[in-house]
Image (cartoon, rainbow, N blue to C red):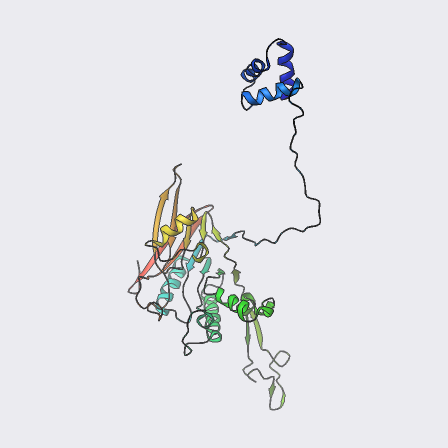
Length: 344
């Protein structure tokens, strides 16, 4: 029976009671149906005609011509691998090759099937908004070294999935285009994916000119480009999260933490979930438990770059990297420092 039917029933059974008494009795017999005595009294008054009409708020579906609003795709990128190597903050061309080799050799030893390049793999020094030394390497040189690194990775790990999550240093590229050449930003050929994923090589016979001894070069495809190699590297941008089981992988700039005592604790306070990130160039770890007893962890990884850059020659950075073993939703993080060339 509805509330109105219950009210009519109680009135018919006790026609001589006051509305106040009827409401008390109605609520006592139907306490699960009515919110409180006042709710029961309103229906008694409605049924007896002393409260006017009760208005029921109905849902209304917008039927105009306004289209859906624009939204960023912030759905997580879900990894399928079971052993995942994670490096970040290499800052090519200011990388430390010895530290990088230690990390990659460990990935080889544990047989990772996925490698996450977790942001700031390239420095984009000359695209920075900060004061710059004009004698430093230009952006074209950085891109050249980055493509060499990608090719080395593919040779070392031919079967591994390679995922490149853009960090705040890679974001300098698009911000530079926004500021300097906004009319060109929509051109696909200028996107990070196109810029890095395709490699164009000059023919060795004609050095890319298309001609030898005044004639069209016979070794070139269409006389111009020798080959065009698709690297198959997946790019994750717009600060999207990567998921490995229940572990969230971020670069670190997405949640805006700066110079905390413990980067891992700062990540935990912002993410409120299992999370691993880089960005701050320090290895750290924290485990915490919520009020319901659920245990979560947070990790920060060290860097693989020059330890004494011009802008921060004295710092508390560490060399480091991590790899993760995933079993369904469960995972285990192996977060390593590199000290004197050895894994700790």
